[in-house]
Structure formats: structure tokens, C-alpha cells
Image (cartoon, rainbow, N blue to C red; front, side):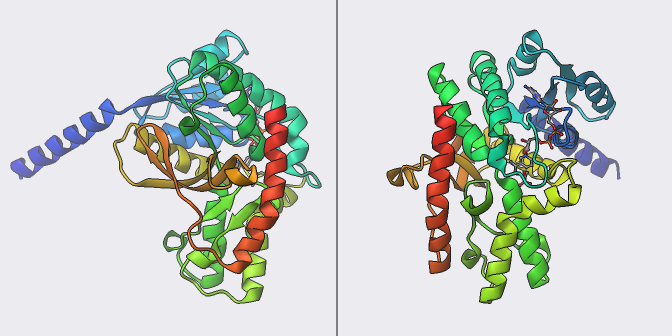
Length: 335
Ligand code: NAD
Ligand code: LMR
């Protein structure tokens, strides 16, 4: 009995010291918002996080005080104000997650958010270039197809762009696709993996259903493809003017942040996630950023996978996605 207890205590101590050595600071910019709050809650539970720095232009003291009472090991700090507040949030950050910006209302496209969110993301990028140029930056703010190139251009201008460390978060498309296919095939979603490639808006979202191992009728393919491409609209419509997906996005954002942490500080191998990154997959076609499965390692996005074998149906979806993506990326880069 004693020996077992001692062995358990030793194993627990060893597990603790291993994870303690790998802990790191994560900053959330837009932390008081619809996504920011539940995302920060999920990150407070992440054992890789030592310090959770919450930044927003409003309400961070309350959110930080609230989360700081949760008895996990990480320290929580709240920051506000675009000067020193933002600097303190970003300084020494290993990962920066950005859900700052306005969400859609019914009738709007993600591109309609460009005018407001482009400047917000640009400002945050300027601060990140200065205060945490080596951090892994996870962009949630829409339109992702344009905000990622905006961030990249600011980092380039400051001479600190590392394409391995800038990710557009497209995990929600993959999470949705898994759920929707599982519903149709009557499976547990944990057994349903769907690769979704392209970008993060309407026709630029391309699910590769032929790679799931399931057979689909033409009707199922059409319905599922449409639902995955326009899943965000379902939520915007149901929320009826009060915003877009927040809880499912927090879940997806926390999953992606955890993967980045596991690969960069957790020493985990074979961490593969889809994400919208600087990519050669369609660079010849003039599309410089594209989401495919990406292998994450200590330096970030280390190996970008191609599409693999795709069906004729999916080739047509890719053909429709590329011109739209090219336009969105050019608009962001030119901003
Ligand atoms: P929200 O309005 O609830 O929250 C946004 C927060 O950003 C607010 O608290 C606001 O004060 C803050 N903010 C505004 N300007 C800021 C700045 N300069 N610095 C720091 N914080 C700032 O919106 P939300 O529902 O949380 O959505 C946020 C963004 O995420 C939207 O652009 C939305 O379209 C996008 N989104 C993306 C995905 C995705 O899959 N990538 C999914 C859902 C939503
Ligand atoms: C989503 O996919 O839910 C987000 O991009 C938010 C939106 O505007 O649909």
C-alpha cells in the first residue's frame, strides 16, 4: 500500500516537474469578448500555460480577476490601454491568440468586417513586432483570409516575419465538418476526421470528404459541403444580430493553441493541424497563403502537406476557391 502510494506520488511529481519545465506565457488579445472569455477559460486549464495575459480595450480587469481564482497553476494578469498595457501583455509571450475585432451580423460577409478589423489587426501586429517578435501568433479575427496577410506584411516591414510562426486559425471548420459528417453517418465525431483546406470564408472553405473513408451520395456531398462552407452563417442567423460563433470558436481556438504548445514546448511529435499559413501549395497560381494539414514542431509550422488525392468534385471546389482567396489575400497584403 505504502509502496504504491509512494510510486504514485513519485510519478505525479515527475509529471509535474516535466510539465513545469515546459510552461509558457500565452497572451489573448480581445480577451473580454465573446470568444476571448471562454477561450481564456479553456486556456486557464491548459497545463502548458504558466502565465495567461489578457488584453482588451475594455473590461479586462474583471475577466482577469474572475479567471485568477481558478486553482490551476497559471498566473493571470489583465491589461488594457494600447501603450504600456499592450506591451506588458505581449512582453515574453510565447503564444499570442488574437480574437480582437467585430463579429458579423446577419446579411454580412466576413469581408464586410475588413474595414474595421484590418486596422485593429494592423495595430496589434505593430505591437507584436516590437514586443514579442518571436511569438507564435494565432489569428482568429475575420476576415482570416486577409488579416493573416496584413499581420505578415507588418512583421515583414519590421524585419521580423517568420512564416512558421503565423497561423490563421481554421480549426472551427474542421471541428464543424467532423460534427456534421458524424451526424449524417451516425458516428461518434471523435472517430470522424475531415481535412478542410483553402481559406476561412464561404467557397474558400474546401472539405475533402473523399479522404474521410466514408461513401457519400451526391445529395449528401452537396448538402455537407454547403453546410461546412456556410456553418458560420447558421450561427450568425441564429444569434440574430448579437454576434457569431463564440463558444465553438473558443473550443476550436483552445484546441489549436494546445497543439501549438504541445509541439513547441511540450516536446510532442507528429502534431498535425490544418491552418492557414504562408504556403507553396498554390503559390504558382498566385495564392501565397493556404490552409492544409501542417506538421507543427519546436519552431512552429515546420512541414506543410499538400492536398493528397482529391476527387473531381473537390477539384472543382478548389478551382472556385483560388480566385476568391487570391483576391482576399491581395486585399490584405495591400492594406
Ligand atoms: P466580440 O465583439 O464579442 O469581441 C471582440 C473583442 O475584441 C471585444 O471585447 C473588443 O473590445 C475587443 N477589441 C476590439 N478592438 C480591440 C483592440 N484594438 N485590441 C484588443 N481588443 C480589441 O467578438 P467575437 O464574437 O469575440 O469575435 C471576434 C472576432 O473573431 C470577429 O472578427 C469574428 O468574426 C472572428 N471569428 C473568427 C472565427 C474563426 O473561425 N477564425 C470564428 C468566430 C469568430
Ligand atoms: C465562423 O466561421 O463561425 C466565424 O468565421 C464567424 C463568422 O462570421 O461566421
